[in-house]
Image (cartoon, rainbow, N blue to C red):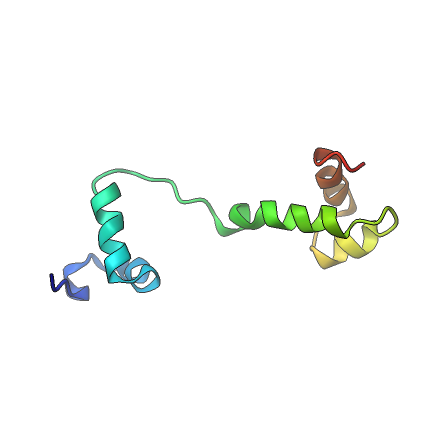
Length: 86
């Protein structure tokens, strides 16, 4: 099959560029015609960020973690409490 970029709606060109044409066509086969939710990037990386906060926490470094992860002290505490560390 020889699908050209001109065959794809303009608003999906970036997705085709990122995924590659073969993967884009697979997405079209799988989800074509349906509405799907794509989460924002920050939500996708939050789990990994939280695991790093837990890994880096030593009991005395809330301020360093706050600065490193660009969060408030309360947000860092919330992550640690949620993970059962505090």
